[in-house]
Each structure stands twice: as C-alpha cells, then as structure tokens.
Length: 485
Ligand SMILES: Cc1cc2nc3c(=O)[nH]c(=O)nc-3n(C[C@H](O)[C@H](O)[C@H](O)COP(=O)(O)O)c2cc1C
Picture 1: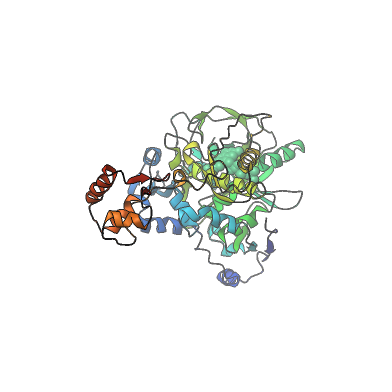
Picture 2: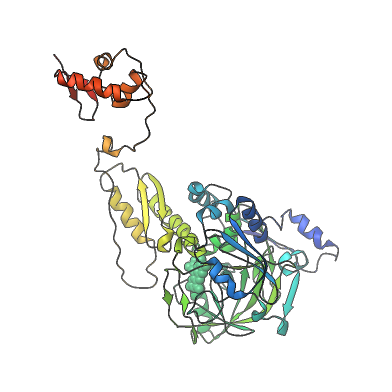
C-alpha cells in the first residue's frame, strides 16, 4: 500500500479574514469537484437519477428506494424540506461512473488508485464548505436531520450512509469506516460495533482505559470516499480516501475535537462514543444479507456538533430488502471483496483474468474467479487464497465451498471451449461445394462463403448429393471433407 499521507498543516486563525478563500485557493484543491451533490447532478445527465420534486415525507423514502434501479433525489423531504439522496452507489455503473471508468474496468481502476501516493492537505476551518454552518450545544440536534425509517421492523430511523473518522492514539492515524446510527433522541444514537473491525478495537481499548472515544461521522460524500471507508488496510485511511479519489484531499479539523474530515463533505456529525461499552440495545435492523439482524448490545454515540454545507445534501444508503444487487451496501461490499481477493490471488496464481463478487448475495459470499491455469493445481491455490481472505467475522470456524470449474489442463483448445458467435461468412470463393472441399475440410459457414450464399440450403443439397455418392465425411471438429479415393 501507498505510504501515509504527507499532511500539510495550515494553522487555523493564521490567515486574515479575507484570506478564507485565498487559503482554499492556495491549496489548488477544487472543493466542489468531489462533493456528493456534483456526482448526483452527473447521474441526472446519465439517466441514472430519479428526481422526486416537491415535498415528500420521510415515510415516502424507503418505498421509493426499495428495488429501485436508479438513485433517487428527494428535493424536499421532511418538515425541514431538506434534500436527500438514496441509492447513489446502488449499481456497478454508478460506482464506475464515480471512478471515471466503465463497469468492467472498475476493479482495475480501483487497484490502480490504491497504488497512488496520497496527498492530504489541511485547510483552515473558514475555507471548508463542510463547516459553512456550525451548530453546537443544544442547537446540534439529530432529530432535525432527514433520517427515515428504512425497514418495517427496524428499531428506529437509521442514519446509514455515515462514514466514521476516528483517531488512533497509538500512531495518530485516522481510521475510516461506515457505521450505521440508530436515532435514540436529539443527542444520542446507537452504533453497531458488533463485528470485528478496527473501530471496534480502538473503541474497546478506550473503554478499557475508561476513556470516551471522539468520532466524526460524515454523511453525504463522494462514492470514492465510501469505497475507501469499507477497505480494511493498515494505513492512515485519510490517505486512502485521497488515493481512491486520485487527487489531493483537503481535510479540516472538526470544531469539537482534533479529528480531520474531508473539507468538502456535505454533513458532519461530531461527538463521542461513551466509555460504558456495549451496554445499550440497538436494532433490529434490515441487514445487508437481506434479513433482519436482531437486537444487539452496542455503544452509544453522543452528539456534540453538527457542521454542514449551506446547501448540504443528506444521504441514505440502502442495505437490506429483496433486491440486494440494487443496494449501496452490496455494491460496495462486492467491490471490496473483489479488491481483497484479487490481491490475495496475486501471490497465489500466475494469471488471474477476472474476479467477480455477486452483489445479489450481498457482495461477500459468492465469488467467481476467471484464470488461465498454467500448471495443474493452480485453481486449487486460487480457491485456498480466496477462502483465506473473506472474513470469518470473528468465528473460529466457518463453512465454505469452492468449485474448480477450470478445463482439465491441455483441453482448452477443443470446440467445447469456444464461445459461439454469429457466422461472418468470410473465406475463399469456389465454383461448387465439391471444389471447396477438394481444397480442404470446411465448416458449413466456410461452404456458404465458398458459394457466396446468403441462404445456405443449396449447400445442404450439395452435401446431400456428395453423401449419397459416398464421397462425404466429417472431421472430429465437425468440418466437412471429401472421403479419400
Ligand atoms: C452502508 C454500510 C453500512 C455499514 N454499517 C456497518 C455497521 O453499522 N457496523 C459495522 O461493524 N460495519 C458496518 N459496515 C462495514 C464496515 O464499514 C467495514 O467493515 C469497514 O471496513 C470497517 O472499517 P474498520 O475496520 O477500518 O473500522 C457497513 C458498511 C456499509 C457499506
């Protein structure tokens, strides 16, 4: 992985007041380019966006998103009339668009970007669009956000497109992930921290020391940021965001803690996870495998500040339901799985051709690998490598099945390994089918080409005549030939 980011620091307050924009300009970083709203506007151009103009209730959101092949923009939702987008990353095409490439090139592009040396630049608070509006104390209110009930049995409305940023005190790196938040009140939300993750480890270390853990959640970000957040690699993950954007990342220090978040975020929710540990009920929740997860004991997030852009666009991520392949979560998981497996295969086999994780299975539990097997047994190595990197999620044992569907070595050249295509009727002309066969064995397509036939039935009749005269034979591969006299 790329080295940690070189962070250039601009001390807050050092600039003169009118240097606010100068500060942003000095960095040369366009703070609009990677904002979510711009990406959503691009989807409008590509026909990938459904727009719900006019006022909508929060109760309208989930039914509009369920199974929807497109992203949906609600222009005014809830009593605040806030703009909200859902399903923004719910297709491979939209994710590929976010990375400036085609769906079948997306994995290669992400792998390339993972090697980009990151550049992270801290900008003054005054220049950060993410802090155009700052609400602290009692004015910071989770129930003033457009948060909808996503599934019928959910324990409450969930913020689901929330990217968490946390400082690791052991090395100063920032850990980045995605964690859902169940509203518990104006200043409290439940956080699901059951699965093994870096954040869980950081939180449990804080709990052991009786410390609260400061955390900032970005809601509303470019898809590349979400892809970075779901990757689990041992680096400063702010740098990972920069690498996956393939551009320098401007970050800004939060208003109530030292965490740095992308300065171009739409919304930021700052606060702490309290020191009590996994003590409060969180859930049920419509999970990413299409079923509910039950009530769990989980930590509580306490809100200290809300900062946002003046025209901030809130975001919700689709997760459970009957059409997993059309959810943000399955698409993100699938891409993450493909990256992890591709990298594992790099050391296990010689020539991986493609890796595909099916989003219809949630993106993590069904995988196809295409490879050119150079020596016997490589397919088995591929299976073992793939088994080694999708996580057991904490369990000691798990059940996995791998199928070697590669052709037996040396049998890759027969007709059974060829992919049928429409005939092209290219080839030499001859006066008759007999003359064509005298030249050598021919496919039926070649015989039609030989006669310049656009019909083919006259070739059937000519072959019948040769067969009746005992002069026709077939090659192993099906070509017609003249029987030697
Ligand atoms: C939309 C979405 C929501 C997610 N919600 C959670 C969650 O609530 N809890 C969790 O443990 N993981 C959740 N994940 C998975 C984590 O974000 C992912 O495993 C991440 O790599 C963890 O990062 P970390 O190990 O650096 O902390 C979610 C993923 C997505 C895409």
